[in-house]
Length: 186
Image 1 (cartoon, rainbow, N blue to C red):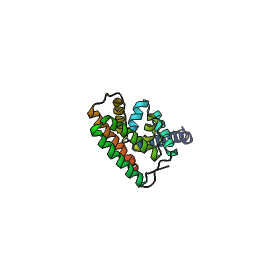
Image 2: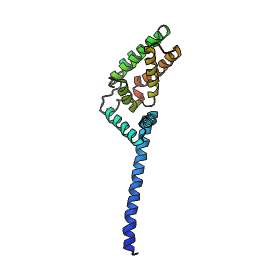
Image 3: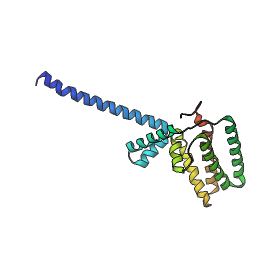
Image 4: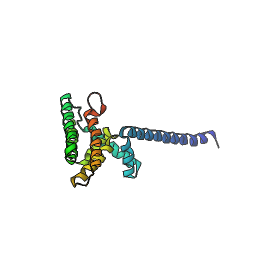
């Protein structure tokens, strides 16, 4: 075989291998970025979808929607008002734990709304929150589940106490603007 023929075979093979390597590297970088951004929500979404690529497309769709929202940090006056309201909800827990859990849910929803998150439905709230609050989302899920149980008086006092703790985690993160300095990404 001549040198020209060998080069005609080897060069395209080398180019294909290089393109595959670049594609694999980009895919790994994308996956790493999504894992960092969404935290445990990445794995949960992959498990729910049953397909990593479909899950990653879903997460990227969430990012695009989130980027179109006008998420804003709270002014200090509003932050103080919400902190006082939370204290009232915690005090209410002693005498009326179910009411306190319902009020905690309403307060977290009001805080989300004031920050700029749409609050039309629980599933969409979860999707929107997952972009910036993926590491605390499991707390919100657990609290919401107990809140649903308490609506039909099926939650124990210990479950209600746990729900308050779970709501508090997301509440604190939303109140502190997700630990972001300056305005949230728009």
